[in-house]
Image 1 (cartoon, helix red, strand yellow):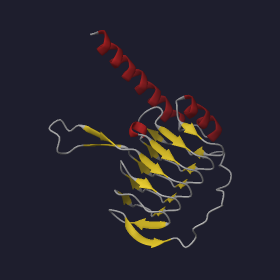
Image 2 (cartoon, helix red, strand yellow; image 1 turned 90 degrees about the vertical axis):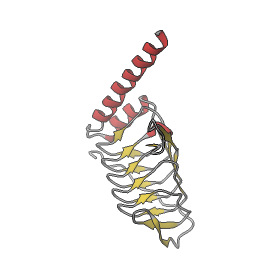
Image 3 (cartoon, one colour; image 1 turned 120 degrees about the vertical axis):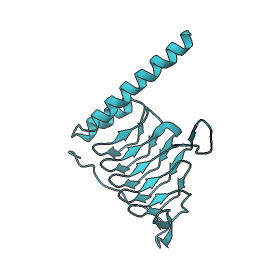
Length: 184
């Protein structure tokens, strides 16, 4: 009985912290948001920023490399863990999910799958990344794409579901994304 009460109180505490993290997303200074997110267990590398209105589903579970930008209104579902590399550009309103339901389960049980986004990836606005997907170095996900399967390195994908539509000719990357905007 005591263990059940402890689990319940722990769940309520996490919900309160996640609620706070979602409110912090409205603070217009990225360095203040980054400070709070780090306190809540999000790993954020040097020079990286998460723009305003980010949506979180859990504390922790998200690891972001250096010089990475996550655009406004991004959903980061860290329940199954998200790993984002260096120099990654994630546009506005991108949704990255690591949990879904097993539609064949009699209990509609949750299923978790980590999402890995390697270095120098660009994800266009309003793309959706589903659980268990890896997006490899230099890949590009077009706006509005729904990524259900791994994306090979240097491949450009688009559509629903996302399919290869091109390839980047550049194979060696060295660019930096630049400074974060103070009020985004």
